[in-house]
Length: 627
Picture 1: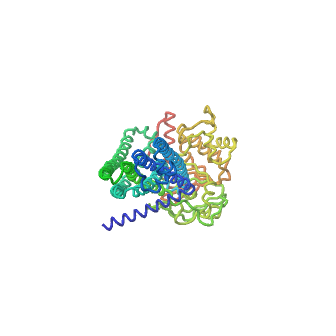
Picture 2: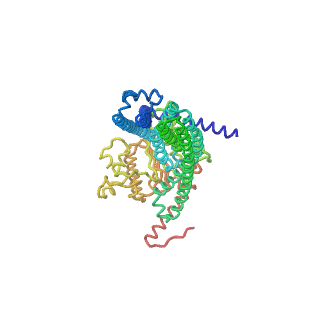
Picture 3: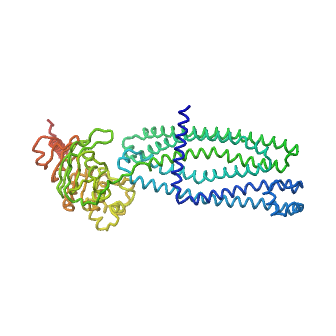
């Protein structure tokens, strides 16, 4: 029992903190929300006036009874018709009462329009602000965060969850204000008319409130599961659409459909559970509301029959009980949406609370054209075994360095250290005499050009993809970079040349064409250091050699790293590093490495033999047997 109580207390504190953070996000839009709430108050008054006018019409005009013993009512009637004497002119008063009902309806409608406009303006501004904040924050999160996160789930949080919050702010915040105003105003008027009937009307209100709160807790838990499952479903869909060519190539459509069907089934079942809760709430609250109306009806008939209240008063209470119970019943829906909103806010703040990537104190924009030193560098991923073990090597300015190693040996991790996508845990990395932890990350990445094995191209024209390298690019720079990357020829072969749309992720280009466009894009940056992470793997050996030759001429003063498993790509580098299990096991030129036993020699012999076999097959000669 104590555990349940403590859990409720903790949840209550979390709810308050969540709402407090939401209030901070409202900064700049609070005036709109206040205007919407004030308009709701006036709209509620306009709605409450109509039953009073009808009561006065029935009792004091048609039945010639004295005015209700209510100072507010007397003041309104005196102002409109001149008091008790004015009520005797029935035709004129009926017209005035009719016009008053119309006026009250118009007032209610006008303020409802104002409420809708300002609440929509505030909520839309809030939604935009949240989306901008999320997008900006995601750009500044560490590389490791994006490696672990699911893209589909992030999209879900930035769209569906923001929309849930926007809908709550636009619709339910004004409804909450309306429920409060109607309850306060209605009960205040009812108490001045008849205390007994007011108490009978209000007796069910606490019960409905308690029932709504219990429903709110259950609904919030159900929605959390539903929302998370929708995120999983979105992730599966995103992965399938991104990898559609792989799915088709392996004929895995049926398997992927089965996987997606499983997620949609789970989402549907959870959604059904949420709908089932809603149906239970509405049917139960209907029973309680009708019970309250029945109680008022029986009591009102009894009091009217005995002359305690008038027919007009009886009609007034019947009108007000509906006005009172409807917003209170709506509290269940409001609380349900509040639960959804809290879940969505929690999921959004999970992103916003993730620590941004930050620079160390005292970082500077240090020149990068200089010697690069890895001094006993050690690194391991979170919860994993060491990837780099006391790795040490030195690179002279302008050298081309090739790196060879088996899968998982730490080749790409070396480049991650240079770009500070991850920071090493031991040793030091220095560029031009300064440790990279003291160089600004943004500057470091701006001055280092990286081309990946699987380059990412946007669904834009080739020209626009190339222009992403820097803010202002001249046409001749684009052409020169494309020529160096041996991309100019095939680009000019397209009907629209550089204005050719290449589709999402460059789907209309071959693997080698994508790599060459990505190389051209990187060359436009005029970087101090170039990294080719197996980015020539999809081009043939002849084109590979031509690109490397062009690069050597164009970027002769630029330090270049080439990671590859293809010896023909590495052999012309100034120096070749052989990395095994995160440690440097050998280094030297191609001639030096093939002259002594080791991993490099073994790979060279295997690849040479395969090339020889391939050449023999093409020429039609005999294939030599492998020893």
